[in-house]
Image (cartoon, rainbow over all chains, first blue to last red; front, side, top):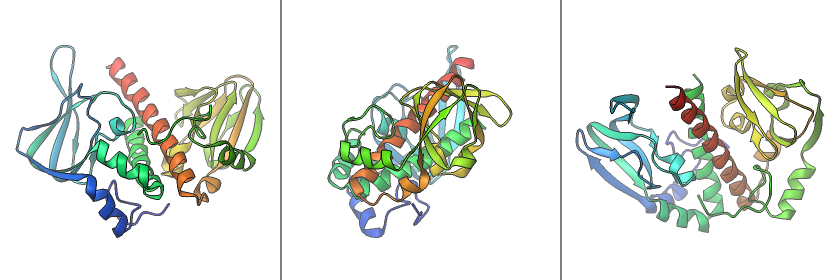
Length: 139
Length: 140
């Protein structure tokens, strides 16, 4: 599958297909320090950072905060929970103002269930993201 | 994502109906591996499906980095980034495997089958990340 653009979720979609997926997209602005995701949440929405930087961190047994990563614009968050029903494994907090696109699990699932061509391309985009995550973890 | 229901035992073809399954099985190569035999991902350009036995992953530095059991798949990440194939697979015991070439997966034209295969990769890659991150957390 050939990438058509650099968007983490739309990379295999043409403009007409992007318009369909955007029906499940909701924009949200987070202020500096706002919690975007809390560890333990069972929500399954996918988030794409459109602008700003997001801090990913966990709390260890001594209740200390351990930074895992800083995600820049163009990064996806929550794609693993979208694929498999589990809980969020880390916290995400806005470092400065963050603009994000939130893709509702239920709305996106309903769209993809009706359009398998689109589903294959969105799933492939998620696979590309997860492959890069796998490579990052191994390094 | 629950838009498909599991219909087959192995993790690559899990969401396919019998007709699609048979078509992809026909395009796959069956191999018997002796204990200790090595499979180099770069040489085969295929998804590996373990039928019997067990494969062990070894990183380029020789470190053991996971095991693949019957029904499970490996090398799917190589479809998305060749860099992900920087390791070797070794049969831990006499093993039977199926190789489904990347070219076959890329050549699927039916949207539903394409989506079902990509959904199977979603599950498999997600599990691999979860295993690695949980192991890293356990070690920290």
